[in-house]
Image (cartoon, rainbow, N blue to C red; front, side, top):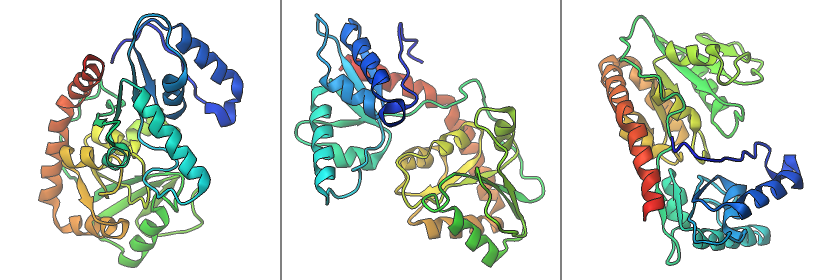
Length: 296
């Protein structure tokens, strides 16, 4: 969206990639004479502590989690970790996050964490509200089934057996379970036509996570016109609410709200239209916010 003159990717981070990409990124930053956007954790720390080259250039950071947020710093290494990030944020020209929990946790007298949207992953796609035909099709996508509430969802589904709903459960390794109305998929790769087709053929997406710094799959769902459901503690909760999705108090109530929608088909239709209407302005708002970070 910003059309940067130069960019450097660190796909593996420090733990998997070692120190070589770290040194390359440090050299990249050190020679920059342009404003720089640092995305996520390691680039943010580098942007804060690598000296700037010559003239005053702006460095802006966007991220949605650290290992200490929003947890209490109850262990020595977490307290140290937290201190390093707070110092880093104070050294940046601007810091932004789409997660309200993150903003509340790290905003202080020294630093204000500003709100920001993440851009839609497929900006060329403009969804049209799809009428409900037959049963309501629900989608779940996640790898860490314990943290993301996948097992909780399967248990609830097996107990309630919601009529008029089917669930496509996408995960790298399917649980050894056979549940009526549930179709398990472990052959889907992100970014493929099969991946897109999932979103194009479902009505609702549920992410009943116990802990979710952001929840990128929710943004994908919104991009394709699905109604997203997730707990209000999810990092993307504000976006879900603004888009017309459904927020719940807990992972358990999120699943209960899903089952309630079986008898509220008009509500699903209305929320679908809201999601599609929201899409039209999302990326324009995101770009405006990005520019404001550098202009302030």
